[in-house]
Image 1 (cartoon, rainbow, N blue to C red):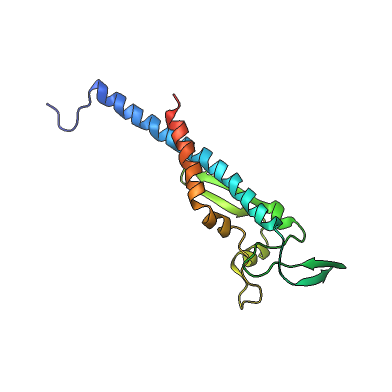
Image 2 (cartoon, rainbow, N blue to C red):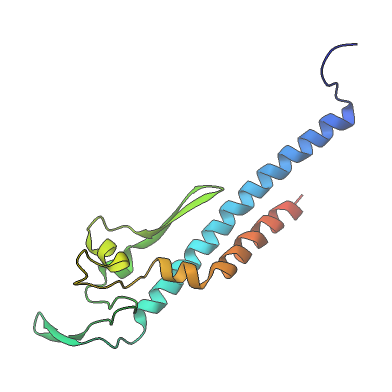
Length: 149
């Protein structure tokens, strides 16, 4: 008798089934991330569309109302609004954020050093407010993939 483990035909079939299940779970997670990413963009944009309660100021000859601290940022140029996106890194990781490389989006999200500009979270806020919903979206997609033949 050889040292180690000897698998029967049924054992090989079980290993193959486990591998297929892992593949389906990963595929479902990626689909779930896609749905969750679109959901987060929608929530963030919805927050930016809400009426603002900050002070008024003049910008390029127009009277504009700013967002108050703690609100979603006001839309002035719509660049930030259009820059929202997500990228699925793997079946375990997704990035959600602004595609702008400027430091302005980071200042809005975290606030400026010295506190002149206070935080107006547009990325973390929708994630925190919808953690359960996001988990359900991803879980449902994994479940659907596992049920597929």
